Length: 114
Length: 109
Image (tube, rainbow over all chains, first blue to last red):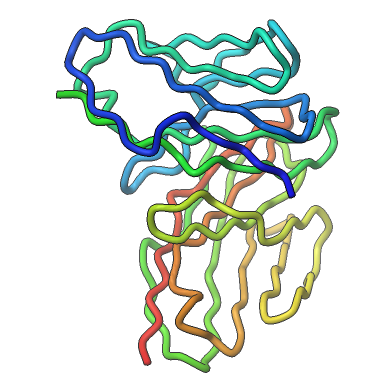
């Protein structure tokens, strides 16, 4: 079974803090994604990566950065957390290639910024 | 712009059938996905349609009409464990997933 794990289920941070969210997948997937999920809105793509050291901006990259130093690990960084970044953050991975590939999701990190 | 529409919430009775609709307007089309998400959990894959027609998988079926920009997820013999949100997502011409806001399905005994 594909397993996508995220470093924390719940996180509380203060405004201005630097926040790291870690995601690890164990199926040698090429593609990895970071989304945020807010009530009444669909999943919104923050960043994605198709390969090690490669990153692409999604729909809402402002205030975020990412790092992919190893194939299995994709980190999301909030350089200076703000209250409007309070959200559920979901990491996902999928096989490489441009063809249809379902995404496998981690359990999510619910981040609260005070 | 790109848009995925699905009802916010639906209620159905245990043992019954429910149809969850999804309409979309996207730049290009490379398939439509349905995911299930229980409260507080990760979304899990249910189905994928890229050609018109009905795909059946046990109690769940998914239908696609590309000309109408329309899909539905059909759940039969509803069980209490089917209470969840159902997310519709379309893969656009750049192979990016565009997500609907999800339909919360409430099953009553």
